[in-house]
Length: 260
Image 1 (spheres, rainbow, N blue to C red):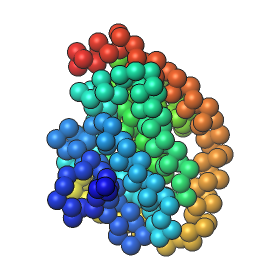
Image 2 (image 1 turned 180 degrees about the horizontal axis):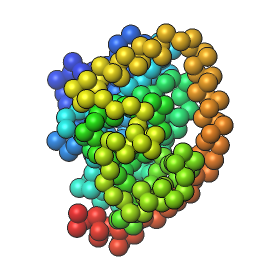
Image 3 (image 1 turned 60 degrees about the vertical axis):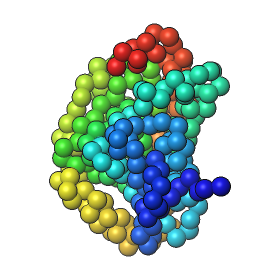
Image 4 (image 1 turned 180 degrees about the vertical axis):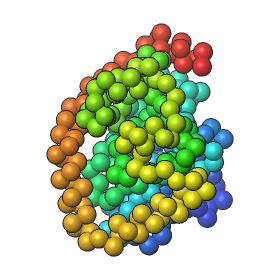
C-alpha cells in the first residue's frame, strides 16, 4: 500500500507533505487549488503526519504551513456532503478534526504555525492550538461557523475566552467579521508579524532557537503551561463536538453552505 504521507520529492500530489530538516519536521498542507481547504484526505493526512512527528524521538519542533496562496480556507464546502452523509460519518469527521487539536496541544514537541493568506474556521482553530503563531503581514482570518449555523472546534471556546475575554470572543465568533493580521497580533493570536516572503525563514529561525534549549525542560514547560491555562480544554471540546455534529446535520445549515 502506498504511504499516504509522501515527502516533497514524490511526484504524486498528496494533500499533506512532510519534510525532515534535522530535528525540525515540516508539515505542509498541499491542496493549493482549493486554498488548502479541509476535506477528508487532508485532515486524515494531517493526523498521520502529526502522529509520525510526535512518535519520532529525533523531532524537536514541528512547523505547520500551507502551500500556495493560503494557509487553509477552512472546511471544503464542496466536499461537505461526504462528511455529513449520516450521524456516524459526521461524528467521525468532527472527532478527527478535534484529534488534531489534541495532537498539537498534548505533544511534547513545540508546534509552530507559519500562516499566510487566508486562515479560516477549523484551520484557524488549529493555529490557535499551536505554541507559536507566526503570521505573514498579509494574513486574513475569521470564524465563519456561526454564520452557517455551525460551531467552532479546537477548544477555542475555552482558549480564546481565557486569552482575550468573553466579549471579544463572542464578537469574533458570532459576528464573524474578517480580520487582518494586525488584529491577530493585537489580540495575541499572532505571536509575530513578518513579511510573507520571509515567513518560513522566520519559522526556521524560531525552531532553531527552541532546539538550543534542553528538550526535557521545553517539553515539561509546555505541558505545565497547557495544563494550567487550558484546564477545561477537553470539557470545551466535548461541548463543541456535540454542537458541531448538530450543526453539520442541520438542513438549514446545509442549505446555507450550499448557497455559499
